[in-house]
Image (cartoon, rainbow, N blue to C red):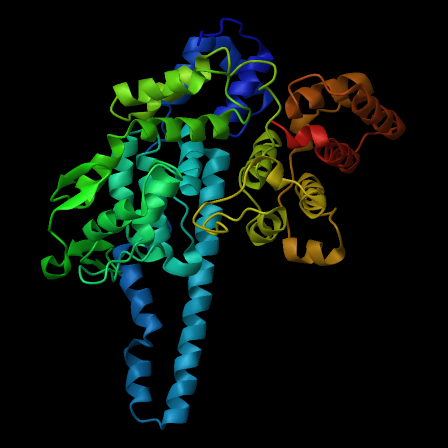
Length: 490
């Protein structure tokens, strides 16, 4: 594992694409001007300014308690129900449930927009990229949790630990309210332990299938008993009377292990470092790792007692990560596709009304992973329907809602803030189709574009070149460029 010495504009773009969500030509040039080591340090150490992204108002303590009270009807409705017959009461209960579900949906839609906006505007793209990694690694769905503020708290937990200690994060997620609801730790008792979390802890979070036994699951589950949750505050406590405090034997060790103790035992397994390193390499590099590389990176993780940042720094700087077979071979996930598009077009925020529709059709909606294993990455993102959805999304974003699969989409999209094409391609640049296409190709691809595609772009530009090359015509050219197989890769 050698550190690569070559440092070109495409190398800077590759780092920005993989470590974050891409960037503008200006950002790529600025990163390249730093030199490789300083650029890597800049991305690793970047932080958003305090207060840059205020949390949703409903996430505050008073908002949580008010929402919980509303789910029970509130004081006035409960008082009114006392004087109703049973049929009227049941009708009122249904109305209360509908209103609560609607409000929760509005809140989670707002949270999704808040996070995607943060991805678009962040000055710490690696931290947001790792927040997204942990959201997939410790997959948890609002469909079961149902409380938006607990999903917000979990998102903030991932952000705090994004580049921190894997072991500490695993201990924290074991007592995270959203995860405890999702994997049924709440309600697990010493006399009847629920094994869901213990199983996923080893199978999906730390070791991988085949590196533990059913007996290990049963023993670990005993330690995750007796937990109680205050849904409004998110405070977790433990009822000693419902907690198993007896000796447990797990992965060859015996002791009176509590929840943290179980995690410590698991993290003493050599496999644990290999498991996470494999996932990190697959997430960022997306090609099979060269022989011996995973073991070397895993040793760095173990030696640092599971600090993630040193492993990432070594991985991003190594020659294997910057090899030709890695660059522009990774299929963007739908979220990455959308955020990178918005950043490259210098659109500050995602179109809120259109956001969930776009992500759902492309196959990835944050806070709604398909199951506890998270999303299937790589080629799983692309099929006939999702590819057409991507092309349609590119049309809506690039044209400000004027182009889409059909008029219904336009109505659902509402008014979409389009790019400032006068900034992206000023009038003087539009006078030369070849120069215009070259500039746009660097903005969107940062590498050699297949000849057939480049000639198609230039031919379109030549046809449109006349008395004026309008913003609308430029938007259609951009749509064409973003609707190519090449643009699906980063």
